[in-house]
Image (cartoon, rainbow, N blue to C red):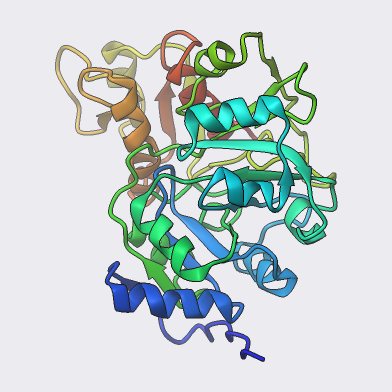
Amino acid sequence: MPRKEKPTDGRRPARILSGTPANLRALAGVLKRGGLVGVPTETVYGLAADALDSSACAGIYRAKGRPPTDPLIVHVLSTRAAEGIAHLNPAARRLAAAFWPGPLTLVVKKRGEVPDIVTAGLDSVAIRVPAHPLFRRLLRATGRPLAAPSANPFGYVSPTTAEHVRAGLGERIGHILDGGPCSVGLESTIVDVREPARPRLLRPGAITREHLEKVLGRKIGTGRTAGSARKAQLAPGMLKRHYSPRTPVVLHDRLTVKQASAGGKQDAWVFAARPKGEIGENFFWLDPRGDLRGAARRLFALLRRLDSAGHTRIHLEKIPGDAGLAEALNDRMARAAARG
C-alpha cells in the first residue's frame, strides 16, 4: 500500500516547481500518496488532492481553514471521465460540449465513488474539465480526478500566481506547480443543471450568462447567496462575504477624480479604467482602457498588492452594466466588500 504523504511541518516554505516531466511525475506521486499540491488553472490557482481519497480531501479543508459545509470542485480530463463520477444529463452534456475544456463548472448528481467530504454531504457534485495545459498534464500523470478549490486561506483573495499561493499557504503545503499567471483571473462559472429545465447560475465567471443561455436555448435563473457557512452549500463561492482582503473594501457605483482627490490619502482608489485628469499616487485602475478581460486578470492581484501596502481602506468602482463579464467582476467586488 502506498504511504500517505505527510503534511508539511511548517519549518520549510513550499517549493515552487516548474512543469518539467520529472517534476510532474514527482507531483503526481505526491497526489497519489494522499498529499496536496498547489496547481495552476486558467481561472485561479487551486489546491489539489485526490478527489476519491477522503483523508486527502480532509487535508484541503485543514490547510485552507475551510468549513466542511463548502464543497470542492472536482477536475477531470474529459467529459468521459466526468461521466465516470457523475450523472450528466442532456443539458450538462450540451454545456460540456460547448465549453469544456474551459472555465465552466457543472453541478450534477454524483455517483457513489465521490466521498461525502467532497460534496458537503450532498448528493450532487461540482465538476469541470480545465483547459490549463500544465494542469491537464498533471491530471494525466496522476490518473485520478483531483479536487481543487482556490489555493488560499478560506475567504481571502484568490491566488493568480504561484507566489500568491506560497504567500498564503506556503507553511501548510509542500509543493506548488508554477504555470505562470492565470489567463482568466476569476474563478470558474458554476451552473446548477441537476434539473435540465431549470438551470441556475450559482457563480458568474468568464463563461457568461449570455453564453450559457445561447447554448441551452432558455433563460437561466440565479442561485441564492448564502448568509453563513453553517449550512451545506450547493457550490463554492456562494457566501455573502468572500474573496476579501483584510483591508476594508468600499464599493462605489461610480468614482470621480474629484472624489478620490478629496478622500483620505491613506485610502486606495481603484477605478474601472484609467481616469482622466491629475492622477494621485493612491489612484489605481483595473485596466487602462476599461477592458473587462484585462480587469478580470488584474483584480485579485491588485487587491492583494493593496492589502499589503498599509492602506486604511480600498475603494472599488463597479464595472458599468450587469451583463457579460461585468456580472462576474461586480459579483467578486461585492463579496469582497461585504461585511460579516
